[in-house]
Length: 555
Image 1: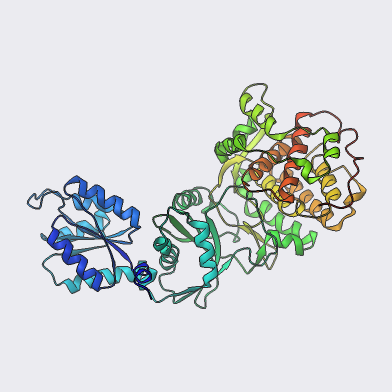
Image 2: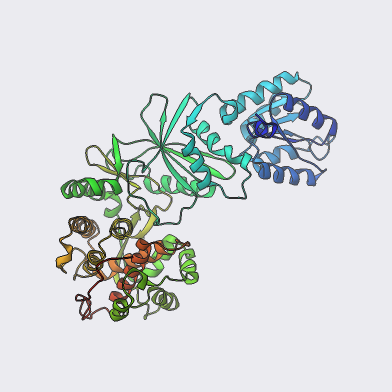
């Protein structure tokens, strides 16, 4: 093993002391003890500032901090204790030449240090303290088998960008060690590993999030989410506020533990029942009867308390409601997005003949008119409820009894009562319907889902919908919409389609590379939704749209 690789596998310890002699001694000892040493430099406040910067830059797991960093002879100098909180998530051992039992207790119990070492004590005691803490927190010091390696490598690529040094990618293993302190072996699986359905879209842009099924030794699996540290903090807050003790029945996860590291955090959730697959996979394999059963169980039973507490709002901008949930970054992203030419998904002559509106132009108009009487998204009455906030078909899990339950609560909170139904439908359309090769069937599928006089009315019919897969997706969407009406009491198809329009734009603008066929079709759906909403009250579909002829083969 090379010296560089050896250092990468060593826990990183920050040394903060104003005595150069002791710094050199600690550094020599730590190197002998197989630790990687990071030294804070400077004097006075500059030493404290450098300590914080060095800890962050090197993502130190441990810290050795002298209690008096400004003036060794000032009894009131406790600057090292003030540094403990600033160095987190590094675990700090406080060092002092003036140790007393009372000071040790104060340091550990009230200041957040993990231990206390008196400088006059035997250095072997310091090693014992460091090793004990490292064995609980650092994968490099714990004999735990974690794999397979390809999933860890994939997680690194997802969670870290070029700003995170390669040697600090051990945060993934460290997070798992802290979440499973008693494990000898962890077997990892991707949550959607059973499905052939892949997604290039997400209802929220989550470029740095990984959800895993984790088997600890011979125990039943649990769910682990690894994500950016701020995202994990946000999810913990929302879980405690909106999920803990608020879902009905037994089909809900329990938050078992969580950890925070420098760049990432981890959440450990209990499994519910015997999970066979994600809803995305279940749609492709299950019967429509079983699909309806699983949806009904989740919406009508598990999430029922939130719908029972929904409140009415009047003369409200739906655009504003969705911006409050997603924040306005999605609008900024849409404003900067260059929409691909939808004619690439179908013959140019046919698309020009349709005369469909351009969806991003309408969104910009909505932004300009937000809150005014001319706001196109203004609705006379709607309902606000606690929603999951990211109910795509990989966050909805199905057990072997067709019971549905959810994970990933980062965006849970108050929003449009129809939001979860719309997001699940949007995911089905974007991933499953858009990916099908039968373009005429998809085109008439879009006309169908934008028709009707109420949410649960899919009245438009066409012979191309005889395609069995397309018809099954329509039956699933019909079931979702019936449940939407049943759970929220909202019948207004216009606000449902507005939510679907926002979701389609939200998802499609996440993609920044060369668009694939399914993504181009999503833009065509956005155009159809935009045209329907911008010309509300006109006959649907517009004259000539049902009779468009298509080429027989697509390039």
